[in-house]
Amino acid sequence: MDFLLAMALNLEFQEMRTSKRVEIMELNNHFASYIEKVWLLEQQNKVLVLELNQAQDQEPSRLGDIYQEQLRELQCHAEQLGTAKARLEIEMFNLAQDLSSLQQKLQDEVTPWLEAESNLAAYRQDVDNATLSRLDLEWHVGTLQDEITFLRKVHEESHRHRKRPSGTHRHMTADATAAPLPATTEPTGAEPT
Image (cartoon, rainbow, N blue to C red; front, top):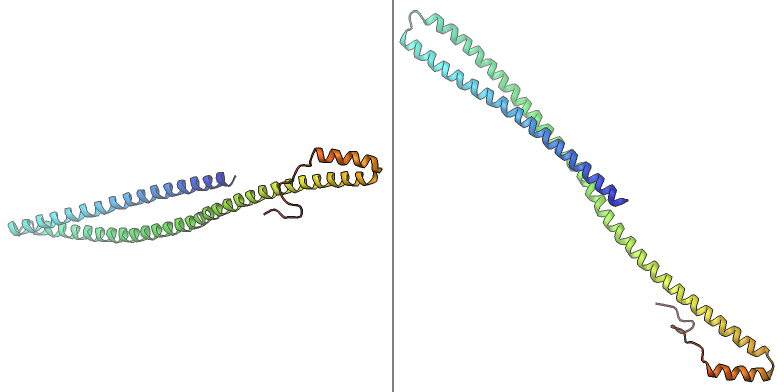
């Protein structure tokens, strides 16, 4: 029964661990896509700034206003990208904290589980030792009961011989010498080891 409980706990632990791992991987993928988008937008922004600078160098007279407008738009876009980057960094920090929290929860779950496994192994050893001791004691009890039964029979036989007349007594004595009584496995009064 304890083994089944341990297996159920182990399965539940593995399922929880797998689900947390999948969740963390999804969050990492989501975060990686945000970082990639920010990087691409920054690269596009650099390209546009370079194009703007080149265009200003070539025709500063009539396109200057158009380029100034585009520059303002690009600067606004760069600010938005900076804001998005800061937001992503905050989200990354929060995800790192969540990951740390999940790892701590996992550790908090694993430690009692490992302790329970250790206790279970120790209890099993204690049960095995107790079973061996019980079997040994049962064997000793059986041996002592056999010895008590034998001693009762000897005592009853001895008591019967004393109550009989002397003629019968001689006949029983002759029978007793013909068939000796069985010996006990242990001396009387000695305790088993």
